[in-house]
Image 1 (tube, rainbow, N blue to C red):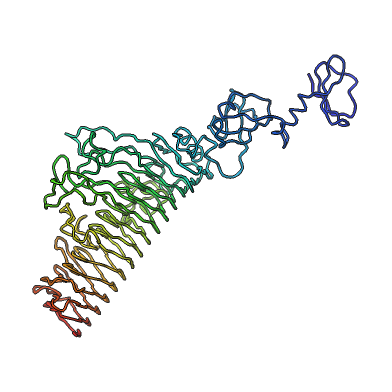
Image 2: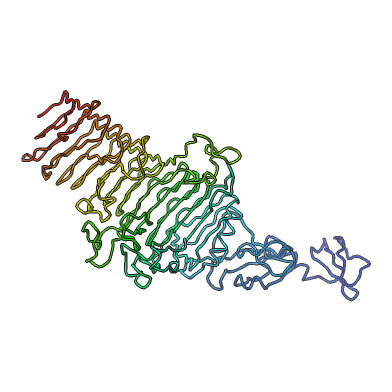
Length: 632
């Protein structure tokens, strides 16, 4: 058979099976038994390859059928639905000669070793093309294919409305060196089926964990100095692990009974991002999980915006093996671990989980565990860049090592971060910075926490509202935190930081029955704050484990409500080189109580108490100079 040149008339000579296109009649003709006849099959082939090719054929009803449907090269076909009858994941395909491309389960379906059906792709990638559905049916295998595709190829992957069930899939991808990508899930509720914690022997192991639900990236040490993989965005999803069997119970058999101060497992992490350059998570909700919501490890410029975490928490406060109450645990809303220039803004991390255990079980300070908070930390930064290894410095950072990877002398490996308009409630620690961090905290709100705001390195706080609310009258069962209990605490752990800078400027602080501020090291400035004290609340205390170089308390408005109780001192300052208390206004609304400011042994050659106004009954006990104060 030969394909002859187009002509207006039938060729005079031909062989059996020859084909040509008759330009006068606008049809294909084939030479059969000595005559030229119109060739219907050739016309069909031409039609299939045209823009109206789908009108020449029917549809295949499923991706499974498509894989067993051969055709001629260039033929076009319509897939009605990925799964028969569901009406989603369909599209237009072209039969293409290809011996190399892998069947990816969404854009390429291999028929045999020589040919594939290739999807006509325009714009964003639809996750339903890979078999992902929003009907709650377990589609873990198909989710895995869709995620692998977009991470390798780049672009935007759009998930369907409804409930997308990842099943028992625990997705992890460390091969993140492809192009940038976006995962979009507006209207998508992601759920998982339960996978039990990793088994342990509780006679030898304190607690176990669970496999991370989604992990993207890996240890950045393999990227090299200055190298990085591109940014990615995750937005619009609700992530829900209500199907988790582990609720924090004491043993494997009882882990579903509810949180215990010594849990069998501290749970899982819902989204764990490692070694990424500018990962963005926005407009997402994380809920109903025993464990962590979000964790960024060794990332460059991670960003979290308009994210909510609801009842994602865990905590072990009583060590199984030695009975200590000082273990560093697990269970947070958002954790920036050794990152560079991270930012969390316009987000909230709310926990209502409490311990559900034998009411007879008490801590060493007599606190009954049952009914108390079980969330560990709401939102925090911890660890320097690289944590303990310069090879793990976040990708794209060139200020820590030289071209050979050796550490630069005197390099600043401090982790800098920003929390802006973040709300936290229901955790032991609300907002925290610790261990070589310098955090900017702007217009945040932390309430119903044992320690709503905690600095253990350097922090600048601008504005915001801080209030222990329900925790105001509760004793923290962990003595390591209870001894420094306050609404705002410049913490004593993590060692003596002589360079520690802690400034609180313009915050509103409500203290019902605790200390509004506790300072224990470094340089402390409490300025321009609105402080409200009631019941057994006090304004300020200083712990003495470390050197306190400067304490400044200036420009504040301090109001003692009528319920305020008369105490030994409402402002205690000690072990401080330089103390300044200037331009404050103190108002005592309890006519029957005398509010004492200072202690009789307070003194210092660099102490100045100047230009303060006192309205009501006050006793001032400072051995240092007190000048130009107004009493009314």
